[in-house]
Image: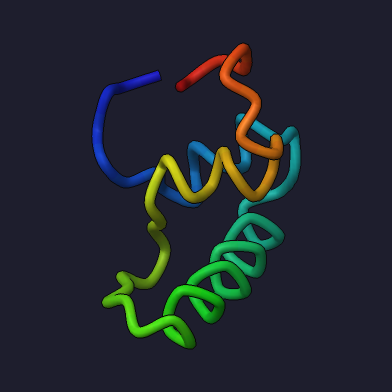
Length: 65
C-alpha cells in the first residue's frame, strides 16, 4: 500500500478481492456521492480516506489508514 492521497481502481480490486470492472463501478458510485456534496472527482480514482471510511466504517485498525 502506498501513502498517496488517491486510491485507484486496481488497488480497490486487490483490496476487496473483486474484479477491476466491479472496482470501477464501485468508484463511480462513490465518486457520485462526492460530486453530490460538491467535491471534484477523478474518474477511476477516489480519496483513500473516503474509501476506507465507506468500506470499513472508518475503523482505524484497518490496513491502509
